[in-house]
Image 1 (cartoon, rainbow, N blue to C red):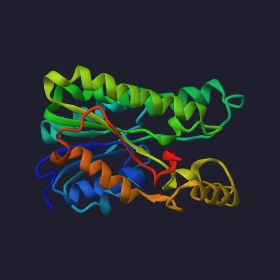
Image 2: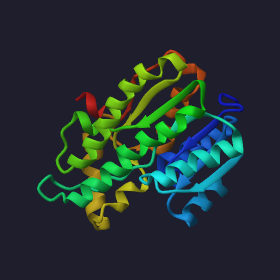
Image 3: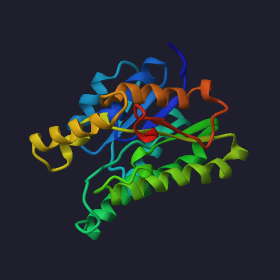
Image 4: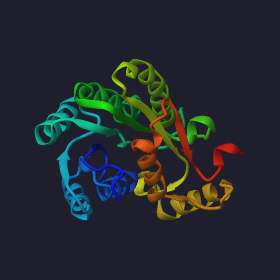
Length: 249
């Protein structure tokens, strides 16, 4: 398994969920993986679970100084970067009426501002034929209630993919996105809801998916691997949906 042999991949928010699943898969495919997270214990535990060359960097995905540290640490260790996966994100579901300015700023800061400046800081070190893979969401096409700030941030990422497709063409760097639907990750346990409420929400979501279930982090990771590998060498500017058909009905 050597689809990414010798490649250097930076994955933010990789201490759990989609980020960790992707880091594990990338490492198995031969990549040297840099993972970030803002909880040191969880980050070190994640690094211990990855079989291969891994560099954990403690960093908050929404803080510019931390973003610069991630890139400078990566470059000092590995020289350049081949794959950038700005995966870190939060999803505190609130109605527009209930959303405070502080919450809005936090969501935009981590989900949109962070990835934007991660790309900016990484660009001087991204190799030709490198790739940036963003993590968006199918919620931007569905109009789900209580997702206003979250969807605004992710829709911004989708538009950024298009902009980068144009801006990076001379460098031969691709910009793409993976767009997950309901995925079984720890993010649902961080919504400030009771276990019963989370279970009810998950059941309701699953009932809407044509395949009748949540997706797994591993299924999303396999899609990210495809987008980041040479198998997707002519895929550029696209957003690949992984949602069991939810956005199609």
